[in-house]
Length: 287
Image 1 (cartoon, one colour):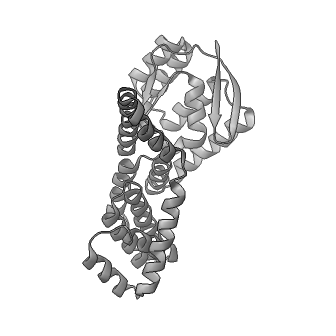
Image 2 (image 1 turned 120 degrees about the horizontal axis):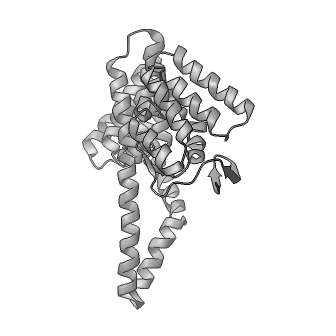
Image 3 (image 1 turned 135 degrees about the vertical axis):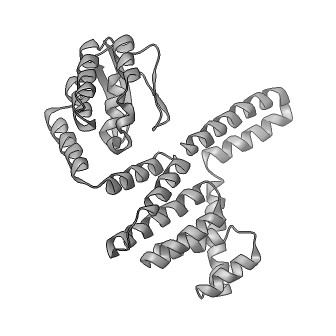
């Protein structure tokens, strides 16, 4: 048994672990993170249950529980559920009830959430999953899920509105990755479908980052945006960029520049570490 410190989602403190902490973690691919205890899995599951799916129902996961956490009984119970083809909800509830992590009310709430997933359409569940991928900055994975959803959207008024939301979210994903041309196209499609003012506003902001003057002029003419309005938008964005220059990331870059003048070797070492962190962050975006 061990005690883990958990932080996030407005919650922090000591969590008493009912199972051993693993020496070798289980890689939760959908989240892009290593899990060292059943409590870490439950902590993730509490707010991201839509991200988990049948892919966790494997012999490898059960082996990990048994060998790394000494959770033999839980592992056996999960294997029986898989053999009996009881499904994802029963699999999750077995973890929830056996973990000792959740209160009675929390278990009831998660049970209701899982039941709701059973009654929602696959389309609705996948939409929520894609949104949660966005929240975890898995932008390419979210885009792939959104595009798949669009292939199965109907022409009903409600689905058209949902499609508009999906295009808007895809635009945001592309903008987060600095792919502004694609972001503009997605926001435009979102505006055509749902006529949301925030989609047009987001498209207008993304346009300010384009270097294609013909594309910019075409956009301004199509949506009746005057040169004065466009100049004002660019000014506001430049002010936001200047504000971001006071961020911790900018300060770190400035510090490395100063360090380069007095200790190039140390600066190169620290810069390499920073670049590796950025590479890992970019890889995480890909999901």
